[in-house]
Length: 256
Image (tube, rainbow, N blue to C red; front, side, top):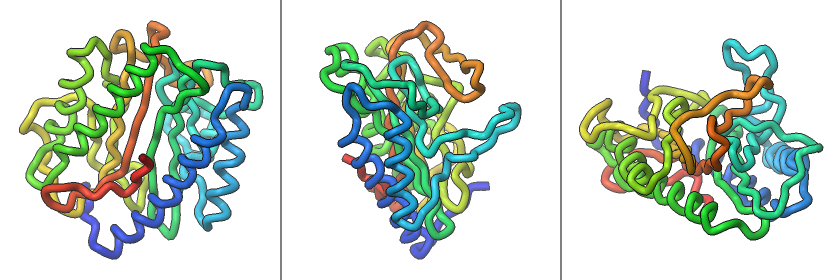
């Protein structure tokens, strides 16, 4: 069931969102060639705990995956789309693109956002992938107004990425957020304008385009978590949490 948030609940979402933004800024400043992904995770967790919050992803379980997620962050590199596990042996290389997804729980409410960062200088092709994926997010947020539909959001992403030769991840989607990390509705990154449920004032949504440089197919590695592009092409992931307020949504995690 989709829940509509009141002003007090939206204020709580803002607090959780502020911590998420602080973590993404911290990680952005640490990412560089030679840094291992567990260091990113450790520093993020320190900040989350110091802020009085707790990591939302650490220990997260899903049916069919026997091992809970081990990290505070999802850190996905190059062809890894989402849910990459932090690892001391995973060292960032010059030219990598690093997708960082962070979630926190603070005072009973969740915050969630993601960015893809360059490690050093990246290729023009990777720069273009990051730019288009971020533009997909901006376009999706722009249409997220009261009276619009979920199909409008998905179409905003798909119609921008696909004509440029990129693939849209269809197996994973954005979601509602609030007292739970994942609430209704699911928010696909594809759709038909005017279709799907109608957006209402007070809906809180995590919109997250996941775009691939290659074909629209993904697979999950044997660890049960890490999702990669099936053809080995690069992927990017940008996410913000918003609240529907009327004509212009409020961005709860304004990391830019």
